[in-house]
Amino acid sequence: MKHKHIYFAITFLILSIVLSACEFSTTPEPEDPTAIPVVQDFAVVAEGRLVPNQSAQLSFVTAGQVAEIFVTEGDQVDAGQVLAQLGDREQIESNLASAKLELSGAELELLSAQQDFQTLYDNWPEAATAAQETLTNARQEVRDTERIFNYRTTSADQTDIDVAWSQVVLAEDELDKAKEDFEPYEDKIETDLTRANFQSRLAEAQGAYDDAVRKYNSLVDPSSDFEISQAEADFNIAQARLEQAQEDYDDLLEGPDPDDIALAEARITSAEARISAAQANIASAQSALDDLDLVATFTGTIVDFDLIVGEQVSPGQPIATVVDFSQWYVETDNLTEIEVVDVSVGQSVTIVPDALPDVELTGSVESIDDFFEEKRGDVTYTARILVDEIDPLLRWGMTVVVTFVE
Image 1 (tube, rainbow, N blue to C red):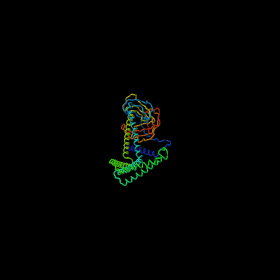
Image 2 (cartoon, rainbow, N blue to C red; image 1 turned 90 degrees about the horizontal axis):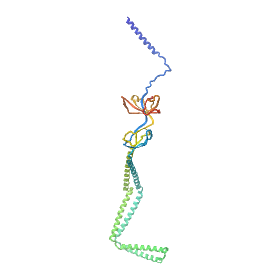
Image 3 (spheres, rainbow, N blue to C red; image 1 turned 135 degrees about the vertical axis):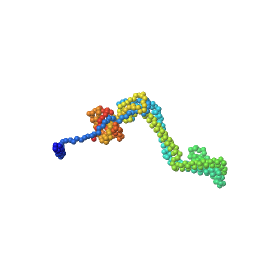
Image 4 (tube, helix red, strand yellow; image 1 turned 45 degrees about the vertical axis):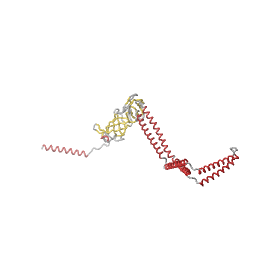
């Protein structure tokens, strides 16, 4: 009986608790209208290091002895500025000058060849006209020499001989009359117009008589073997000239002389080859000369410069460090694969340097590497953050805490 009473007591207690709970759940306490709800903020935080816009270690690409130094540590330099030079430059400079001289000569030769090539086409109409005239003259020469050759090899007809003699008689009569007319004025001064007129008529009559006699004699006296051979040779030569003139004219109808064109084109090709060779030699000499210079690759400040005149240097030996301080960045390389998905380009960040915990800078994400690294078992990515403004107390390489603002 005692155990039964205990069982009922426990049961009653449980029911009382359940009923109390139900009553509590159905009558909630009124909300405080002034209460501010608390939101848990899980911002991405990473470590980073302060770096300049860009930096580079400079070195010579060839071995040699330092001849000149043009800057000192702390100097501002421009991109392409020569900082120092190695010696033994004379032979390379001589090779460069010779190559430039050869290039100049080759360019002049090319210009001359191109002008001559163009002249062939410019002069072609005139040359064609001259060839046509030469052809016409050659044809006439063939006709003349052929006539003479035929004359030398053909016997004269008696009728022709009689006609020729009649011409001699008539010419002689005219000559006698001219002599008689001139005789009264023969002793007059040479400026006398009448004397000059009769003298002119006498000369004409004498020439006509001489021609008539020569023609008659040529008909009466047969030609010698030498004259025949000479006439035949003249005719053959005239025919050869006609053939050449015809060939030259036919060629010019299609344009300038092909041989002249081929020669001009060969000169152009040769000059172009000389130019290419000279340009290659210039590039080679200039490259060798440039290898003796230590050159700034971008505009910046020399922060480390370890070089003295007379020093022997090796290729790739670090000589100077040039830094571009025009902008500052923070680089953080420990964004995990879980964190990087919450970071994006252009996202705002706050930056607190470890050395200046009271200084808070701002910036924005400029880039996130696509390639990953594995560090201490985590997959990580590097982000580059542009700093909006910099505190003068900060220095290159200082560590910072970066908070990526959501």
